[in-house]
Length: 114
Length: 114
Image 1 (cartoon, each protein chain N blue to C red):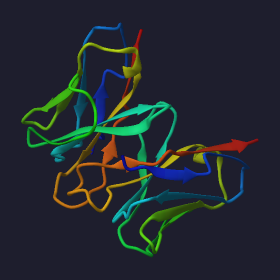
Image 2: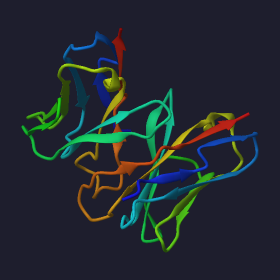
Image 3: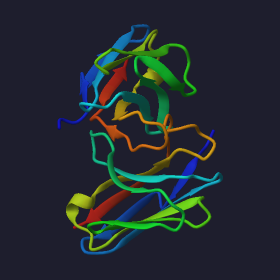
Image 4: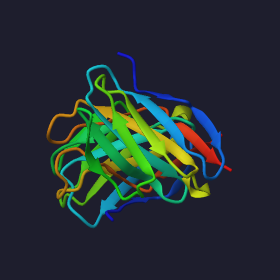
């Protein structure tokens, strides 16, 4: 089935560093969603992107909808301890009808080194 | 508004048993989707219910079933449990309008099958 590949799989950074991660697909997406999941909890929506080329910010987070519609990027500036968690990209591929199904990426695990 | 709630949060069952999980969506949301999350397969879509009807279904065996009540609360049932069914089961709610919507996740039910 449809697969979204995220890279890197894991990141080990120091507090205060900036973070970049991306998500790529073999198929076109018409919406990209970025979620963060804390241990033992469900994913929480961070940013939603609806148009190719769109750049959207949410505090220290910035995400971009790739021009080809097959990728998306998430940046976190000046990381803090509460940024630790797993980041997922997700979206319904173009051939899906409506919002019935979200395909999730493989996740990027962010760890902050003291 | 209260968020998505799931009960129970943790469950231990043995092979061959059946289990029922419950999800209460955000007030006013009419769509409930269920996902299975495992370390090996990541987040995978199970099915979506809207107005008490299954609107879409992922690629899971018939042992996985669900239903939705008139108040939009949803239950998911897994019969004849297998060891591989051990996972975090997440439900997500949305308004259920046509087109792409963002989904809001509950904290999940962690199921362990022994």
